[in-house]
Amino acid sequence: MKFDQRALRFCCAGSCLVGIIDVPERPIERGLLVITDAAQYRVGGHRQFALLSRTLAGRGIPVMRFDHRGCGDSEGEPRRCDSIDEDIRAAIAEFFMQMPDMKEIVIWGLGEAATAAALYAHADQRVRGLILLNPRIEAPAPAIRPARQYYLGRLGELGFWKKVATGNVDFAASAAALRQHLREAAADHTVALPQRVLAGLSCFDGQLLVIMGGADDSAREFDQLIGKHELKCRRVEIPLANHTFASREWRDEVAQVAAHWIVVW
Image: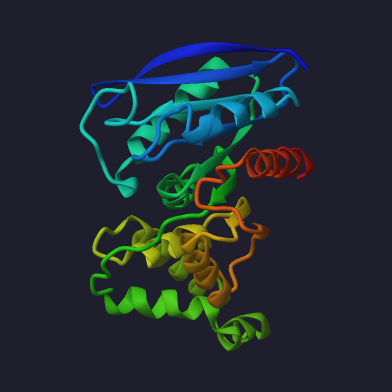
């Protein structure tokens, strides 16, 4: 399918951000937003983001990629992956303005950008899916407040959820309290980053695809986290792939898996 490419400039908190959107000739109603991390910009290492966008746009999926503040050609000071919510929100607003018939989006992120997506998505109902590649969750672990540690710990307790299912606890009250604590934990910078990511994903009610590089340490750490807490997701591992999926074979596989997943649910 043919597609056009548009260069974008839009504002976020007084800074000018730069992006690119690939618009298919006959776009579907679900778009993909690619977030870049601090180490890369909107083209991506080995032109991965550009090639991904072209592959997906050729299948009818509109794709927008952008540089957040302090990255690539965008203005502003560099910032951590857990401090770009405003940038993501501004990019989503621009994406919908450029694609007025679009109904919902999927966010795609690699490394720190995947972490940023995991922390953001639960707070925006326009985001109905996440594609996370080798999320980075290592960080110094501050003390977790007791109430939040209690609720976060219960995520992996099957016995607790059996009590919920059998009516031995007040489901509505417990579910509401849990969701509220998870939302607060995801946004709380005093909570350890792995727990913030877990909290954000646990209260995200959209679809989740995790793509792991078999040779990447970040992927192994994240895999252990989601396995321990039995987080519901589709998990795909590409054997021998490194953190950035640097070979053409690995990049092509990532693109094919992502394109198929986006259109089948």
